[in-house]
Image (cartoon, rainbow over all chains, first blue to last red):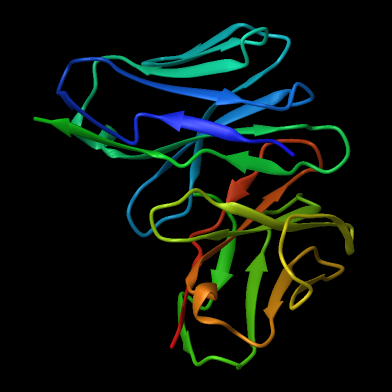
Amino acid sequence: GENVEQHPSTLSVQEGDSAVIKCTYSDSASNYFPWYKQELGKGPQLIIDIRSNVGEKKDQRIAVTLNKTAKHFSLHITETQPEDSAVYFCAGANSGGYQKVTFGIGTKLQVIP
Amino acid sequence: ETGVTQSPTHLIKTRGQQVTLRCSSQSGHNTVSWYQQALGQGPQFIFQYYREEENGRGNFPPRFSGLQFPNYSSELNVNALELDDSALYLCASSDIGNEQFFGPGTRLTVL
């Protein structure tokens, strides 16, 4: 089955700096890679996703890159703000058949004002 | 905020008991997936229901079972509770094959 590894497990940045979270996946059949933000006491919220036919996707301050050959994908947050502080999860899924989403262990991001 | 709701918010049970958790999917979604999230971990896939049928299952024992109803709401049932079942249980709804939207979860504590 799919295995998603994520690092770092914790990340502290100064407000205004950039944050980068990196993930690797094992199953070459995975073709959908969502990123989730989870705030305390809430369920994960989808913030951006990328499919395997695309190498990069951007949405305002958030961007995701995918290297299918290396099975790497990354989340980039620019101009970080205190409200970006949360736990971020990368995930991989094969959207064929049923969509079992396999999550990474999470990265706790702290943005220091 | 998604349109996915879960009940109850919190639940305390003792070992050996049975529990039922409920999930109402977002309007227009026909698929519900259930996940277990232990403290400090990522969510782990339990199973998925599509149009009232189980459509895939993760590495969880048979004492974890579920149902999906004609209105696409869903239940997760866990029998013979163990201490390690203490976790946040999340449901996510989707239109099959598309992005999943998560509810706030049910925090289960097994004593």
